[in-house]
Amino acid sequence: MILGADISFIFSIAALVLGAVSLLWLGWLEWRFYRLFRGRAGESLEHLMRAIASELERSIRKHQAVDTVLENIELRLRQSAQNFGLVRFNPYADAGGDQSFALAVLNEHKSGFILSSLFHRDGTRIFAKPILNGTSTYPLSSEEQGAIEQALARQHSAE
Figure 1 (tube, helix red, strand yellow):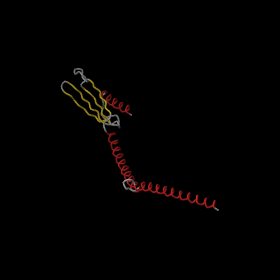
Figure 2: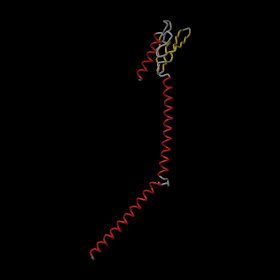
Figure 3: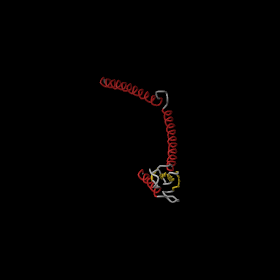
Figure 4: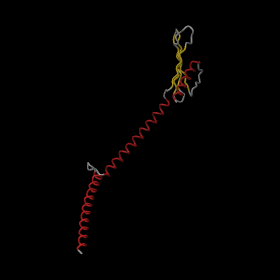
């Protein structure tokens, strides 16, 4: 019977040690959960999650606003002057130096205008003609047509 008492005493001591270790482990876990849910600055995990969700919503709204601005910029850019063609020439035998020119200014849709300047000793004449989809309703000189072709070539090389 003494042997049975020794064994039950050993089991009691082991149970006490296991209980003490379990209490220490539980205390350590409780401290970790407290830090997790209360945070270092006393914030709860729930408060922190709400703050993150709020910041995420603000970032999404800002991203949407930036997307809208970029779409507007792209629309405006398509209408802006993007492609230019310049041909200098001498239309008169008695005026030298290729002082005359034809300048084509086109947007992404091949529309814009052509500006022509004819230089002569007595003065300069300037003409403007609208361009729609790469052509004009007005007759074009070979120099003006060349300026349009230059502008269109630059547009194709940029794509």
